[in-house]
Image 1 (cartoon, rainbow, N blue to C red):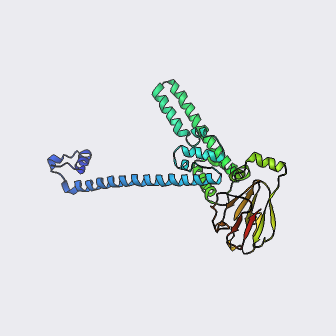
Image 2 (tube, helix red, strand yellow):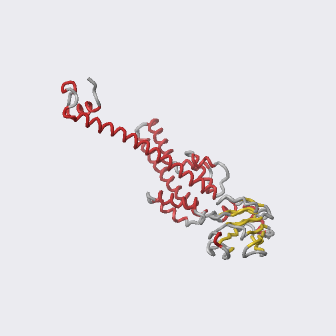
Image 3 (cartoon, helix red, strand yellow):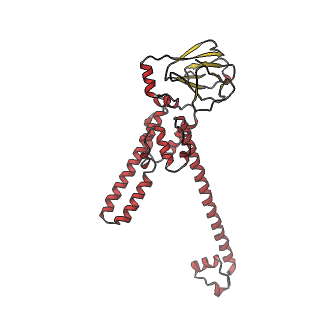
Length: 319
């Protein structure tokens, strides 16, 4: 006689002997067998759903990190945003911190656990293990503190009040921090500022500062079409000239035929020799040949290049 899953469950629950009672009294065994089979199916389904959600979440987090890195001017190593531990190094690149800080940035719990496990294997449960446990806990606490410091530096780079990172003492802050990172990654309202903005534009900071002190020649753009046609607008070395229709977000305001112009359309930075143009818009910034600039990624252009904003009704020459 075949012993089914139901028989096993019956024997365990009711001291039921299938060899004596001949299998399935009153169909109870069949019911239990069906329930047990459904339990296995659902368990496997839950496992696959959990794995799928974890993979999608991990990939999306990497995508957010990659966009923040590109905005912050991180060059190369895009793959690092999607590889465990390497993504911590990539995150540290965004704020200009050395790679070795990955051992406590986002990974303090993991490495602390390894140290604790190895310590347990080596010294067992003797008194020294208690000391080791205290050290590991302190290490993890320091990692949490550094996580707050990291977010303060990250927020400062993108013009967000760094004190917001102090909310890291609240467990739910991880969700809040991730929401802020999504805004940094995908919203044109958050862009690098200060020295980081100049680095994104490819300007050597020391050279830029010397140029300013030494009174280097300023750049300028000339309007070719639109409301600024024929006008020459100065561009100070290292400063970003932002063109758009919002007087709060932009410093060169477009009010004529502005249906194709975004509130913050594009930014132009001059390093003393060449220009860097960043497109922030939804309708695009183009070269004279119709090539659209990549959004939120700086494009280097020589003097004399013509750019078109939204449509040919508004264009400038970088002089």
